[in-house]
Length: 331
Length: 291
Image (cartoon, rainbow over all chains, first blue to last red; front, side):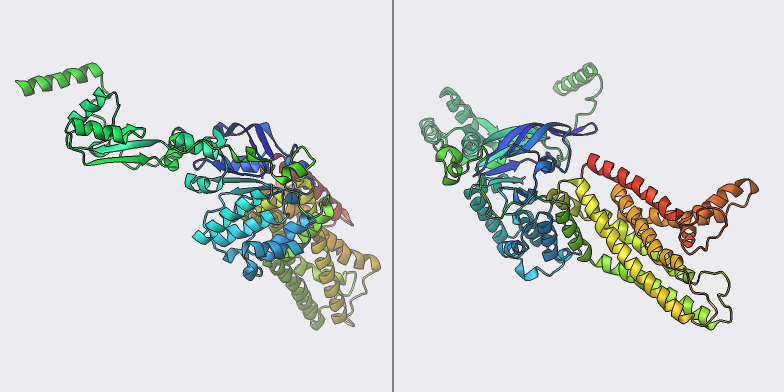
């Protein structure tokens, strides 16, 4: 069990992690979700005692990380797959970790077998692909057969087979009663593995909920309508008390699963429909909505909206000018 | 719409939850729990230092320099008409190789700590051993013993070979104290110089920066002193000469460039003091900073 209470980390003026309070429970996979730069890795580093919190506290089964006598047999972590000395062989990398915690050297072979790296045990880590490095990192996390496991973006760089493998690995680890805490920026990935969900954005807690609840609350269903007779359909819908929202491309969207009702309404008013379909918004969209205001690095997909000429001048003058143009046109 | 589901953990308490007696239920590993101590960290650091090629390179070049240059000077002196008769300590022939070799020990020392920051390995290390003081102590101890042993063996071998080469060339036999200073003394000095580099590497967390600074510390005082021509700076110039690391090293061969300045075992106490101060600083910074 990992307990965070009011965990805060500031770098100068910038707040990386802002008053996080939540608990990661054993026996389930807890997903830790947030856009890039949300503070996921910083939080994980604080759990491991690598970074000192500015305020607040984090405990592992009631103890601070540095109070753990043999941390690797208690909590195994994969933070950064590339955090190995490139010149060291995979076998030696794991061996020095095992020795530092008094773990029998035989475990090195076992975990290499588990992650499927036995064939390259004597190869240097710098020749590893990202996927192989991830596997080596996971081997390091599993080395002490720990009761708590923490993975930072473990599916990065893995091939489809590797992704399937890590999913089932995490589930089986949790099923053995272990605490599994895994971060990701992909909602779809979490939906497949996590039982519980912690979402953060700009260091703040946005959601701490079970996956089932999150799906129920956030998978909005709506009806999409295309019609050449928009005005009449809108009138008809309005008369029936149904609110329609215009979306892009002249389509209409109506919240909820009212497809039958809308179809019958259109038939009664003799409105031609080109499309009437029930849609579900994806969890990815729900996640985007949740974190939209807290995404740190926005990428523009379209040029910034052009402001009308003179918009930043005195509004009175601008309005007068516009009026003048209208008058001229009419005259 | 799907019907609301009960969150998984509440569904049914699995067997492991009932089994565990602690307030924190969960998996219990069959691997025996060990209370770790410095010995574990030392074993880990020993595996680390011997499993990278940079160790073999730096130490290999070091041995090559000490033995190669030592033998060359021995051969040249033995075959030339000039003799080492008089008061000269014949062991001082080992000085040149050792001075060049110091660059290797400096490099290895800095790399032992700083390279972990470059690769990110330090986070893995500190996760495996959260006691930062223990990590630094283990690194320092392992490095010091390796550097001391290698230097002792190299200097002893080269000294014996040189004495054999100079047989009958009029050179006097070194006294027991000279033997001790010329092997154990210089080895302690060189290992401490490497250790100082290791601590500088831990403070700077940057390999190239650490190596540059330490080579500067060795060479700069002599080079700066060379350009101090004015009379008014005579005293500074003298001090730079006397306390420069090459001159302090030569004190072990009672071969100093000047008559004043450090003598006897002084250089060892000076570098020991510097290392203790650096260790305190490195430890304080290590505890305070984020990894």
